[in-house]
Image (cartoon, rainbow, N blue to C red; front, side):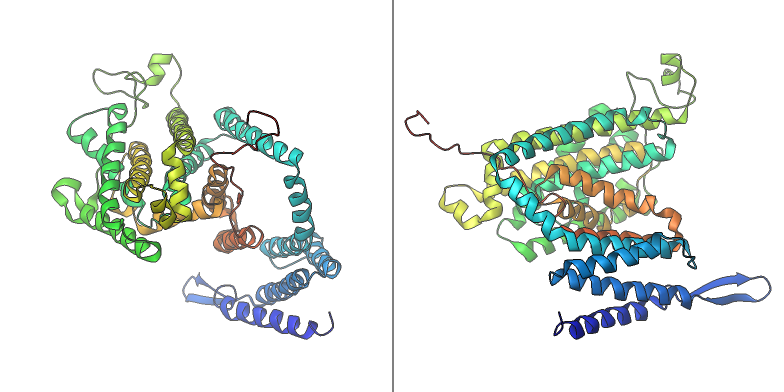
Length: 472
């Protein structure tokens, strides 16, 4: 430890200096309006100093843990976490959270190699493998049961249900992109284009032709799949960064077409008064149009604004589960194994007789189909869409969900969607520190799980060993 200690202190000091230089403009100053005097500066240098000191101690603890010095790191983590969670008065509640999380991070980093070694030993045993598969299966069923029962929970208010619908929408989008990126290994940065195609297909067909939600839903998926094939042909010979650039350009082309084709898409003004989904012809509103009845009248219930959200929640839940089931079945078919082979080595695929052209096109088409279905649901839920709903950041968020969850992992997409979409809402009470807390959570995940939350994937096909003297 002796020769390395000065280097560790230097590294921790440099990290703290960079944090101070960046944070002085974010945390150190605050402007507020004083009646009759205009904007006035409020200085928060004490908060900044405590945060920088916390970063110094945290970085030093992480370096000690990385060098295998578990006990010094645990002591630092316990002291830092104890100060944050203890009765000591700090200038703001956020500093308590910041110091407590820093202490937990150091402790977690110090114990992680030991815990990972124990888990690896257990997983490589036959009993560990069986328990792992059974545990993953039961975990999936528990998630489904919890999702089905969520609307009846005591805390399921309108805000919770609206956030749950949003999370499930991104779960469905993540599972669709997981086919392209996680299974086939094709980096797609323009996935939001198919989402937009599905949304505008529903909006135009419902407002111009008067078609219903359940009729347009498969049509929107087929329209988006055709656009997926249209994108697939130009990128058949591209890989890696070049593929990402072309798909990014495709997404921007679709957005610009939506803005400029005013006669069809209404341009930047978007499309309003989009009809929502119905249940056996009953609409979810307080009053029904002529010739229709409301859901409340059909069921003999008092009207509640939460009824529509619950109905939308179950629709997107069924759509998301259907996406997952369809994907899992495809993985076991020859096309699914061809996707995974393409992801590992395209040259070897050609040598084995797999056609990369059809393999890529099917991945793009099926992934786009699910995005189109999710887009039509989005349009029916929002009742208004515009090109501003389909910017590049949406593609980046969906891709981040796939990567953060673990490439090719279905449950990983669920966990990543809950974190990426739910965390900003849960941290909203922190005010201006909300995105800082969100960024810290993302850093923690990538420190401990650099390959994603669920980096282990069950193989699509298992080869059972031939027993001596048996028939195989």
